[in-house]
Length: 177
Image (tube, rainbow, N blue to C red; front, side, top):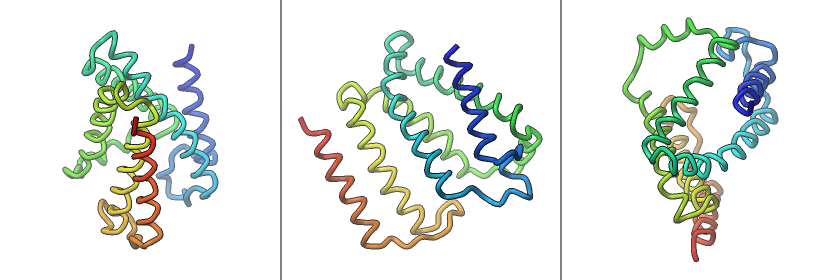
């Protein structure tokens, strides 16, 4: 029942975010309002907080790698359902233009699941979240600054560096015993 609720919620959010379009890649798609983008990102951020402890609980029954596999299998199934129901499966033909750097997405997804299963015990959910968010923000600032992976370049300013530094301090505070 919970799985069905999650699928319905995901499909509903997709339709809401797309404004009635079936795909964000359709030619008439003009982008998402920044407020809506922030709300959706905050919502998924809250969900991410549950990921390490839920996966670690699963790992107690099926092992660390078994939990990683199960998590990715369920994620693949959910993404497949959303693709078929709300997307365009024909877009997968674009895989012909596959580039090796595209592997960073699924590799990082698998790594974050596996590593957070291992680290949520010693660090706690807060420590894991702080460490992940801090390093994600630092790496993202570098990705923006160097315009990696076709991201629009955003200067690495003193203000941005200060934000990263504050997160580092926060991570040290929440992970100290």
